[in-house]
Image (cartoon, rainbow, N blue to C red; front, side, top):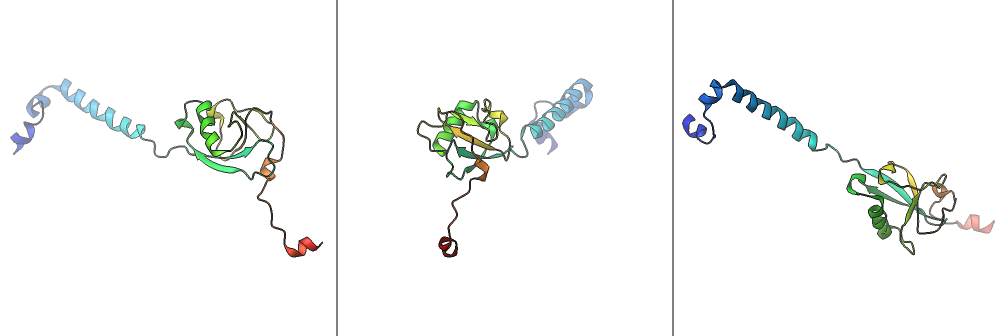
Length: 145
């Protein structure tokens, strides 16, 4: 039975045992391929959750999305995808930080858990975007006052 199994290999076991150079190449290739294969498969993809607001819209409560920044080659492709999520008249053309209005120029500048403001061609409008909530329903007791 050993002869049948060894006939499937391109080398015989006797030549492997007799030639130390072949033994070294064989063991080296095993040690190189196994660790590299496990490193190539990420254990978890870096998921980035961000909140998006519309520029100047104080009634838009924000939309949370999850992205993998490595899936986007450049910022323009990401902005095209955002245009289908955030309804703006001319699509999403710019992305700003809500605090100081600095423009995001690279997809890798996005941080997990951060908020961003989407705009078409208009300049950044400073609002308290994080303070915007869904409109509160007024109860009867508050309405009478």
